[in-house]
Amino acid sequence: MGSVGTPEILLVLVIALLLFGPTKLPELGKSLGRAIREFKKASAELQETIEREVDEVKRQASDAPASGSNSRGLDLPAGALPPPSSPMPAPPAPASDKEPPPPTEPR
Image (cartoon, rainbow, N blue to C red):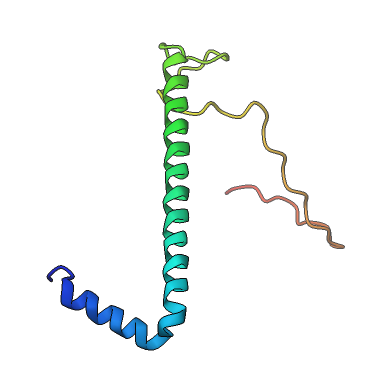
């Protein structure tokens, strides 16, 4: 596929002029310019935020002890999360009128 050349751009402009008319075309151009400017601004802010977060994670990783052990004395590989300090609570048992069947012993 080739790139967009002068004849293609002129064709698009003529079609836009026929569709929107000479009074609406400048307004559409301004709106499109504002939208592109806002998009560029938002993407630059997002990129800066991501770079800050990456730098912060790198700084925290370099500040962490090199041995890989944590405050509980567990040896963890680099980047691994420690186990939770307390177990998760069990979900409540469903309320029923019947008594649960007795547990069966394996044969």
